[in-house]
Length: 261
Ligand SMILES: CC(C)(COP(=O)(O)OP(=O)(O)OC[C@H]1O[C@@H](n2cnc3c(N)ncnc32)[C@H](O)[C@@H]1OP(=O)(O)O)[C@@H](O)C(=O)NCCC(=O)NCCS
Image 1 (cartoon, rainbow, N blue to C red):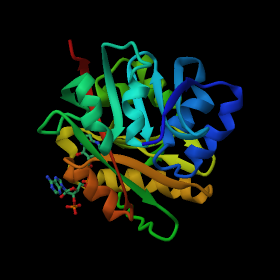
Image 2: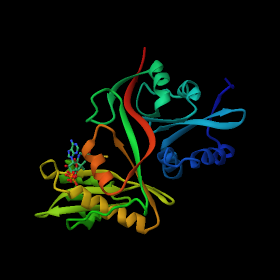
Image 3: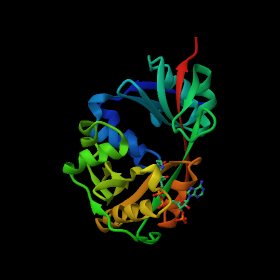
Image 4: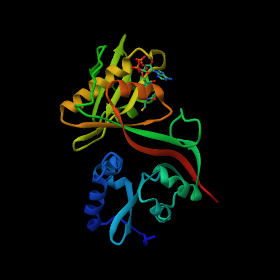
């Protein structure tokens, strides 16, 4: 095995790291986004082998550890984090090595039966998209934050933070009952997240209509659209497949873990 060294990201390493990430932007979506927009809250550690970037770890907001790359980088990268507990987002091959240092205690998504959520990645393009609008949906603006707060059971100020990009919703009797958003976009690739329908309004096709409107607008602006969904969430996968999202083949693991003694 070639020797791996790890270093904190500095200016000369920025370009090689971005080249590494841009070779597969679906895999590195949030890392690229964090580097572009959230750099002040993100510690970045790069793994090098013979001066080539072979992996990296992002420690975001002292609570999320995001790792990608050659699995042999996992242990050296982890030795740069002082966190005792973190929400991990890693590749499948990294899990056994992370587990030597951190013990998974909770899956990232509530529907998961075990302690580790497998996220499937899906993507829609103009070619694959199959619009399915059967209800009246509308683009949401900041003034809709109180309605979104009621739907999600959060504070209105917190809901305001959900309006950084595009969002669509469906109202019924003045209540917002279904929602989907694309808060982050890196150049021509947008992510869909925050997809939610009120529990007593599910299975009426609302999410298909809301997601269609959102994806239609993003594709119309020349973006490709991707998302991550737990493999244990058949209803969401059904919505996305029905409107033309296809699995890309990428799998990621999400879990909270505590450092072993
Ligand atoms: C996922 C979610 C947004 C779907 O919203 P919705 O408005 O009920 O979705 P729709 O009615 O448009 O479509 C749901 C489809 O899944 C199907 N479905 C529901 N439960 C299912 C299950 N357990 N297995 C397979 N299919 C299922 C429905 O039959 C429907 O398909 P159909 O129109 O062909 O009959 C909603 O369940 C939700 O808010 N879940 C919690 C939040 C969440 O998981 N968000 C997704 C994060 S990626």
